[in-house]
Structures are given as structure tokens and as C-alpha cells.
Image 1 (cartoon, helix red, strand yellow):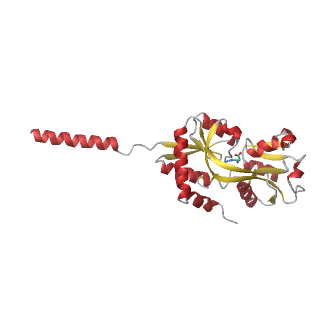
Image 2 (cartoon, protein in one colour):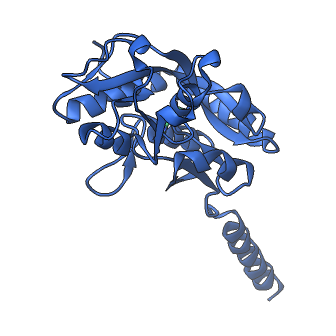
Image 3 (tube, rainbow, N blue to C red):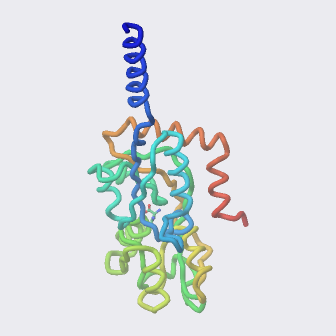
Amino acid sequence: MKKVLALTLAAVMVLAFAACSAPAEKEVLTMGTNAAFPPYEMVDENNNIIGIDAEIAAAVAEKLDMELEIKDMAFDSLITAVSSGAIDVALAGMTVTEERKEAVNFSDSYATGIQVVIVTEDSAIASIDDLEGKKIGVQSGTTGDIYCSDTPENGGYGEDAVSRYDNGALAVQALLNGQVDCVVIDNEPAKAFVEANEGLKILDTEFAVEDYAAAIAKENTELLDKFNTALSELKAEGKIDEIVGKYIKAE
Ligand code: ARG
């Protein structure tokens, strides 16, 4: 009898232990982005957010044994969403800037971006020097916005020159409609927009070269460390190049 009891007890303990160590729900990694920025982030025909940032975040989440959840929001609310903890991380082709660094931490960089100018094919604008007195479309809160709306002394064109749109696609739409004379935006989305729409071209002159990185809340140094470790492993494994190569074809 004693033996049976002992065995039963042992069995119960084994079961209880199994229950405890059963794979718990994975911790969620919430990423915010603004999914109108191809090929870094865009919405596919099934309404899924795809693109370089989504895939890099998914690869990082897998390394951290976390489940990735992506939230689409306005670009200019991403920094606040990160610092308030509404999202864990922002991956949005986001440029590392000194000003943003005051509000959030940035991971190591995983890509380079260049600010370029999109004009209509018949435009009289041939270089950055021709932008004076022109209407410039930008995505609100982006570096293109920040440079262009700055004062002429600082290399900008002034507040009045700039029309702000919620995303790049809307800025390009405004250019097509003749509401603005050009759009200042990152080179890869610029290429995608020019490819997707007739009658547009990108000027040869570049505005600025920038680093893209993930933004994480200042307090969340644990996630920053884990993110950077995962990112450097992914770089070493060639995974980042593979993801980028899938969306950006070498010229
Ligand atoms: N690189 C620019 C910036 O950081 C634009 C990024 C826009 N990203 C987006 N997903 N809409 O300001």
C-alpha cells in the first residue's frame, strides 16, 4: 500500500513538474513601425506588415525566444510610443539623430539611408540648389522634414516651404497631384515610389547619408543589450544581408 501511495505521489509530482515547465506563453516583443515605407515596411495584400524591418525584428525575436507583434502607427508618434513603453522597439527605417537620442536609445545600426529628392519627370528642378522657393513634400517628423523645414542659415528652406504628410505615399501622391514640387525622402522608398508611379524621377544629388537603427526605451537597457547581441549574431550569420538582399536588388 505504502509503495502504491509513493508511486502515485511520484507520478503526481512528475505531472505537476511537467505542467510547470510546459512551454509557457512566449513573451511578446512589440514593434512599432509606419508601414508605408517600402522596402523597409509595407502592407501586403493580406494586410500583413512585411519588409526588411519586419523580417529583421522577426529574426531578432526568434533569437530571443519571443513572439513578435507589429503595430502600425504614424511615424512621428514612434519615439513617444517607445519612451512611454507603449511599444518595446521601433524599427521604421529610423535614422539615428542626436535629438532622438535624447529621448530613446538606439541599437547598433543595421542599414544606411540617403535622403534624396523626387520630382516629376518634366520638372525644372535639377538639383538641391533649385529647391529654394519650391513647395517641398515630406513625411511628418522625418529627417527630411527636419532638414528642409530648418532655417536657410542651417541649410534648410524654412517652415513655409514644407508640406507635411502622414507618410511617404501621401507625400508622393501630393507630388503627382501637383500640390508640391518635390518630395524629400529616403532613397529606397524613393526608388519604390518612382517604380510604382509613372512620371517621377529621383535627382542625382543627395541630401544626407544616415544610419538606420532600432529605438528602445532608455530604461530598457536589458532589451537593448539582448537586441544588439541578437543583431550582431544575425549579421555574422549573414542573415541581415540575406533579408536586405531579398528586398533590395543590387544595381
Ligand atoms: N529615415 C527617416 C527618419 O528617420 C525616415 C523614416 C520613415 N520611416 C517610415 N517607416 N515611415 O526620419
